[in-house]
Amino acid sequence: MVAERAGDTGQGAQPVPSEGWDVDSIAERYVASLGVRWTYLPGLSISKLDRGASLQNNARRGAPIDPILVEQYAEAMRLGARFPAPWVHRQANGLYVVDSGNHRMEASFRSRRHQIDVYVLEDTTPGLLRLLRVNLNGLVGYRPARADFVVQAIEWHDRYGGSIRDAAAHFAIPEAQLQQAVRERDSLLRYKKLGIDDSGLSARHRTRIAALPLNGTVAALTELQVRAKLPEAELSEVIAAVRAEGTEAGQVHTIEAYAARPDVRSRIAANEGGIGRRAGQRAEYRVALFRSLKMALGLVEKHPTRSQLQLTDAEDHQRALVLARKVAQALAYLDE
Image (cartoon, one colour):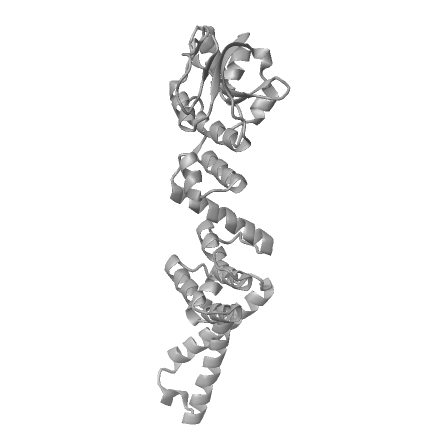
């Protein structure tokens, strides 16, 4: 018996499932809430399913089918278990594409069932089919991962418009999670467009920096964050100072001034650990530093008082300045 039902009224004949199949009352109520018409079609020849198109029409972002689950379903079918009828839509060529129930379809082929009951969706608007494909899979069968729901919601929002709130509600995910995912996606696209290497940034920091409107500012702050690895509070401080400047030049100058602070320079030196310097050059300065410090230590140990040096005040002062300059120069280099 073919049962047709209008989702907006809930009226129509009660479906009579074939052997091995059953109605899907939960999915029926969801489809009804969208005002979508459908027909329950029992005993459809399984050869009328477009298997290839169905597997491509999938809510999961990775492999469309879990072979272990298919085998479990198939074994249950051989033992006489009843399964909810899949949801499909009809193509112009007369074949049907599965929107929810690919694992049940594959298990039917595996268990050599020749007929299958299906719900045929009457509304084949692409945006609606995308929405139903994701959410119906979440109601029954092999539920996609939350990350798949988020990606599908973003794609649906990009293609069909509307608000983030509407997209989150349609795909049953928290609005804040979808907003954050959109911001992260937009930040990746912006960095790619600007040609800026963001490999040294966390996703959170990349998203915060990418929210700044001026490209030069984004590039300068990215370089600072990658080199200095500012903690969250300091990064917020810099961003606040940058936003207080009205021009790109002013914002870049603010970032450069922050990078020139002694504590920030020290942090950059510690993080980079001499990156970009030749190994031999680093060794030379380490030797020079060691010699200067050893000379200073020797003088202090051997001549603890100025009178024991047998030098005038001027000579004493000059000797101390020479030592101090050598040590300072070596330390300054290491702090670059």
